[in-house]
Length: 397
Image 1: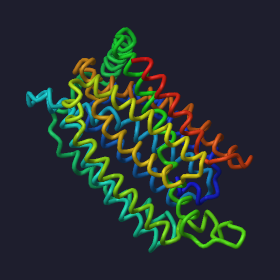
Image 2: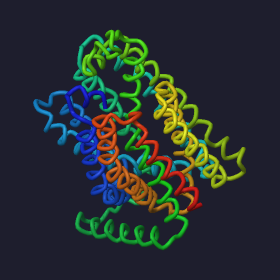
Image 3: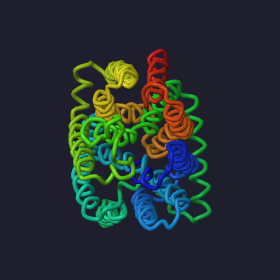
Image 4: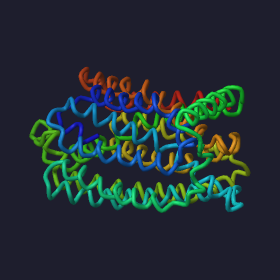
């Protein structure tokens, strides 16, 4: 988000950019899952990574802010072809190994390594930003692990591709379409899947719309507490300049490094939460209550000017989401057919992105309104939306 704020975009425009990304994913999510199940999951994943790489290059070299919309579309293409596909490959491998009952544990471990990598990325991004002076070098650096992952995917075993159809291209498309219709029908007719879709929209959809606000919150912490101020109390460093201030960069890198490590361990320990609570449904209920409590704390803290508590709430929400995600995905896998794995998980991902598509512009607009009208606080509308979503989900359960 700071890279977008650095281009003098307001929160409403940033919210629209996020909505464009979500719309792209919504249009491609379910077909991409069906194509992955039909044409091969490895090929789909490689195509996803290529889209990410082109997106990062566009972010780095965009000559005008309007090009950022194209970059977001490319990022959305990458996300749509990745989300359900890789999880389906993990679950397929577990089934082939006779370890399907370890879904929550293994997915949590794989997700934890992703977060540990993100922690390292936060440090490297900070170094690039300090040395390069802008965000271009950060986007260029981001392409390197994606290129390495393309090479990694080429070596994946062929049996993880799923039910690849060997007929002609036209016959394959017909079979993919048939499987897609059947999966959508099954998802709609199954009450447990409908409930899980609603939970995903309430948690993941809201989280996707608000998670990056941690970055301007951390900038606000530095501006409010540590950067020089004039005699009337106003900051002497502009928001744009503060984004590349070494102290601000160090704080953001440090917080995100800790956040990613904590998130990694939260994912790794998610199966233990299930054991402590007795079942995946009981664990989900407990996590929903914690989620609601954090949004209430965030709302109150922001209204009374507790910016450090606001930042802490955002961090805890991110950590909590990484404990929640493996449990949610395992619950989906429990209720879906193995042959439809990527498609079901793509439907889930589309449901949450649909919520993000609706919420992100509204969230950005509401934060802008609070700032322009000089109302108390800055980010409490985000907490209000999250709290209402959590209350709805708890009532649904």
